[in-house]
Image (cartoon, rainbow, N blue to C red):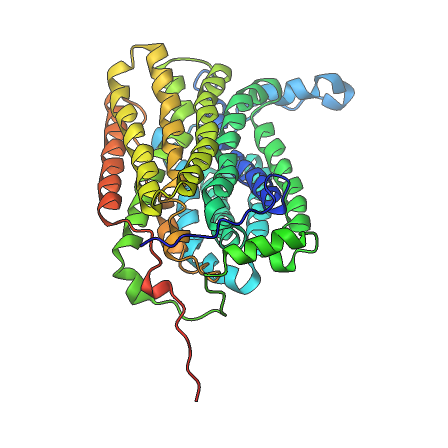
Length: 469
């Protein structure tokens, strides 16, 4: 049976934990803009209508005396921005390198978060990612290999940052508010995707594509200052939290273990089907999400034949729906839980909606490519409905391993975050295969999660009393 959490009410939207959700929303906003910056900038970086030089050489002409005419310096920078001969295969490697970096650090950063604290891990990851974003335009001039290396290290940094969020919410989020708080924080990724895709093309046309990286890299550095100043690992040590809110959080989490770190029961976790169900949910969900976030501007540009400005604006529309559905889904999930609906029922309901609906939309895309409006509607629905998973299996790790020391337990399902390989972007059949495969992966993840998913605390996640003589 699912445990019934405490219904005692604490302060709501004016509370510190909701402030934490907003700051984490801003952090997710920053990280996703830095990740997607290349997706919108690459349309200009490999613009085939401009003259191409060597593989990683600039197409810019001889330097002009911009100092003698400062008013023309920005225009000259924009028109002389480098253009590269990167094949679709090379672009796919560049896009996927950041995700491979994320995989490499998810489990190690879980251990490090237990040693140094989730606050330090998330803040350090965000800072490193921001600095590497600022360096990306210069790296492109040195060669594609350096760009791939930069993106991989940036992925490792973002993996550190993603890791810390689960650990922080395990200590800050009361059970009946988990969906709500995590959805507010997680919606920052959808909102960030909307902003970068909406204004990225405008920035590229007005200032030059390098400024996409300079602007959002700088925003990340500012976010780091806010993060290190305001955030604490747990409510007990926060100097500004009210006594009422602290008591509310600690009381609601009283049934959870808070003992010192202990060894990870790896064998038990490997044999745990509910944990594998969450893993497969993550795997399938982020397969489709990665395809959409990474390749949506290229798909709209190549299939709908629009310029970089319109491509960015159109690509941003799906993430308005995604951001809204994330928050509304969290509110609805906690509402259903407060009405005594079983926890596992709510998790499977939102997981089903978040995997089935986008699969149907993705499978339909190749058949409506000739219809501009229908294509846009389906592209809007895919991220919007997909983000309902935030109230399903994405938050499910906190149900089956709610220990405050679960920074080690939660990284295993999160390893499914990156899954998709680089699609072949130069043919209609290539896009069709990508969408069909994504839909099939989503359906497999759905069936596996519905079959084996649970919400009860697993035996390996329970604290066992130590008997001393």
